[in-house]
Image: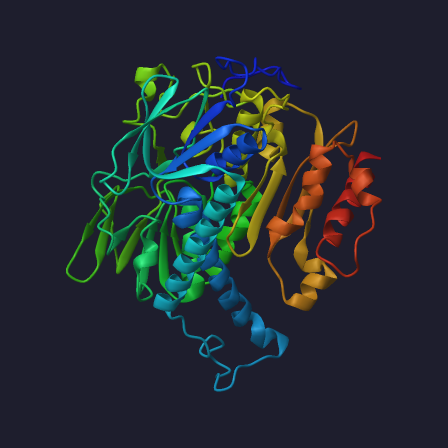
Length: 490
């Protein structure tokens, strides 16, 4: 992402129109969070807006990625809670003391039917909202014909192509799962994460290739649902890009729950057999299972839609090169979301789309600031982060202090039977300003918000420490960590 001067970005000249009376014409290619949020901003600014989407409103985020995966994970979370029930003195009727999970059965066909139904309902809600706002929603694919024209091919295959002249174009074409030549998905035994929801029965033994966020989330979910799981990690630990202490907690939990984690093991191929799959690792070891999930990253959907021909610059990895207000190398053409490679989060895509359209239509905006982004990994427990990481602080040489407290000492955690997790805060050694934080806990995505406010508004650890928290509450640990930081800085 090209750097721009921090602070307010100067708005461009309002798109020129022939007589000064016509509304700006905006065409959005892609209906994911970056696309539909941009469309709403543009429409409220008075623009004529056309949005083209080939898969369904909400894009992969709603239909095949975030919404369905987190719905599945929410189901798995209930299984995790149910497994803790005997510790709290609860036992299901017919349940045996030596088999705490024996009272629960996962009907994966019904789980996946619900997952797909909820995703479609969310997509329909987005379409209704856009149409009610006056956005012209077209089902089809869009490609650039120069920087100021989008050619739309309708999905029905019958309607003629449609040419849409545009004063502003917003590209939000997303990404697709990356595949390996020697491990091509077949949709039945070798799967990408978009294909999991077609399974009718729980995989007996699921091999997950890739220990990043997607791999870790699905590995944990299917283990909680009852599958045997083997997680293949090419690195020395799971979640290699995350806080080391947080990742260690997750790996320990995985192993404690019976998952096989193979670190420093790179998969070179996956093939279907008569009874399941075989995954071959570097060195020749063969891992057998009933199914294999390939979670080895994604590739931007930027090919074959006229970007290079229109002069839009792409990065070496094929992402659209954008600056902090989402401008591409071509005047009037903006981009948002996974196709830019900035940060693969729905919240970031939505923010990019809103910033892009406000900037394009003449409003002053604050450039995207990744240092204030809150992120969450939906394992059990979850990992939520905001602001600077410990690794980035050490690399930059910033003088900081840090402390963490185990969640198990929290009284509310004791009541809920929570044993794994912690709260960690980083603060500037001199000023005490909160630079970042990590929360590992059930529903950590909800608990991180106080630290998000602290980072966004440059609050100090003392500001956090002196704020009231409910007693007992999990959030009380955040204030307690802040109080310890005060002592460390004293």
